[in-house]
Amino acid sequence: MSSHKKSAKTYLGRIRHAVNPPYPRRLLRGVISALVFALSFSLTGAFLVYHDLSSRVNNISTAKKLGRTPPDSYSGRPINILIIGSDSRTGEDNQALINDGSEGERSDTAMVMHISKDRSHVNVVSIPRDLIVDVPACEHKDGTQSRPQRVQFNWAYSIGGEDGDRTSAVLCTWKTVEKLSGMRIDESVVVDFSGFASMIDALGGINVYIPTEIHDQRNSGLELEPGCVHFDGKQALGYARVRHGVQGSDGSDLQRIERQQAVMGIMMRTALQKNMLTSLNQLYDFIGSGLSSLSISDGISSVSEMAGLGWSLQSLKPENLRFVTLPVYPAPNDPNRVIVNANEIRPIWDTFINDTPLPAGIEVRDANGKVYTIEAETSTSPSTSSSGESATKSPEPTTSSSSSQNNGDATSSQKPNDDLVELQRKCEAKK
Image (cartoon, rainbow, N blue to C red; front, top):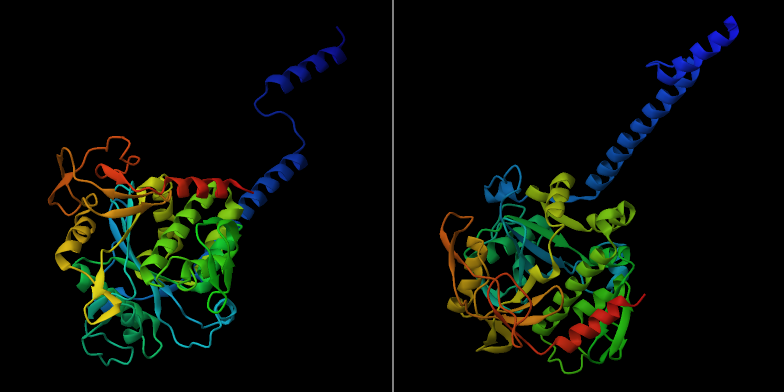
């Protein structure tokens, strides 16, 4: 064999088996440079996304004024969050949505969200704006204090923020809810009109089945016949807020609360159907569109804490997100206002305090739109609540002609809204 052929064979073998094949150094440098560039670009992109989202968050410093220190993390802890829907007309976006000549800022909607320690259940209590409550003395930004008053609930926000300071407005509402419920609120979120509408738009709108005629050209501008309707953000906001011109409605805030709860359930299902957790572009648009219109308290205002809390809830099932409206009665001196029986609502707040299942006799609406009443437990087993107190956890409910799906609390009596739920399901399935 010639020396030339021998060299060729040796060379081929070295290419096939050598640890360091003789690639040209220039090519190797190019590959390394490309990898470093790609890694740097990814890290820079992640930083810019984090910085962009962080810069949109409006933080309200509540902890210092309350004399409280938020935990380093809420991981593995139950959490109670006060959610306030503000009717602020401040800013071009809000004025474009609602331009009725009103000024100032009030609490349009209020809810308390309890997220269970194991993140398997979320219960939300809606507090009627017309509920007569005791508003405690509230401190204003300039250090002066309001006097304690017995007024309708949504006045607390205006009383605290009479000088235009949103933090004081939130704190007065916060203290009012704690006085009403006897429980500790951990954090708060305020969302205004444009934030709500922007999140709906980021979902591409939502499909809503309208069960009754709505003719409210004067206030919300809605003119709707029964049937499936696709709403953009502005229309969904009008539907969630409409009180007048709704066939069969008495114009009260209680029936409006039902529509708000239904819309929140539709938003959740629409987001899940779009697989937003696996679509970074859609998730970024959805989160980013609402952040600038949110005011969030210290403990959950960082993007990392919000992301962690959201990620911990990624497996939450729609049937385990339940909405509760406090049982109320007409006020003796004013039929347009409502009151509560303290003994009747005490068991609801106790479940939030002790991180235990909702009590029997409470009507709930889950995120699937099903309405049912929690029934008495048929058997019990002891468990320990997050507060360290002994609690009773109910078994999984049985299924029968009069019971709803598994709700994680107790057996439950299904109300006759199955037809409406099915119509809404078909409506959401439409493109």
